[in-house]
Length: 136
Image (tube, rainbow, N blue to C red; front, side):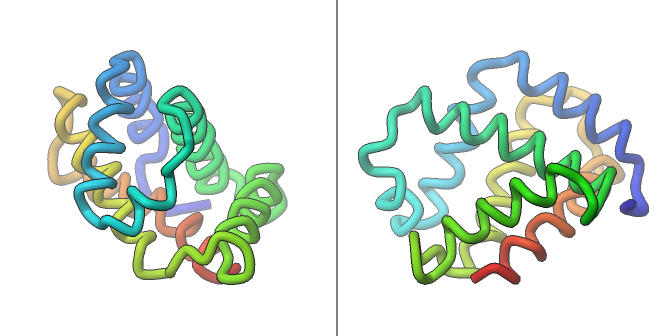
């Protein structure tokens, strides 16, 4: 569905996710980006946060591949509702911080990371981020 090297992004994610420190680095990046994000995760265990990230990235990549008719679209719509102003009140301005935290973590853990792969990652996550923002 997206115009990027999605298999390359998937392989990149595979290289990163085998390192448990990848998940820690992502949340360090995200929490350092905004105190609002860190506050939102108060009371959420590290194990739960890591599970959420694994699920989120999987849904994002599935959505990039299969689009609106996919089960990933339904999951992301639900995530968007949970994060909406009426429920968790996640501001749309925080989503780019999530993307940057992900890119920075991938850069740190994927030895094949380069400018082309970064561009592919950004293209791959954009539709899901747009969907989530639309649910605000």
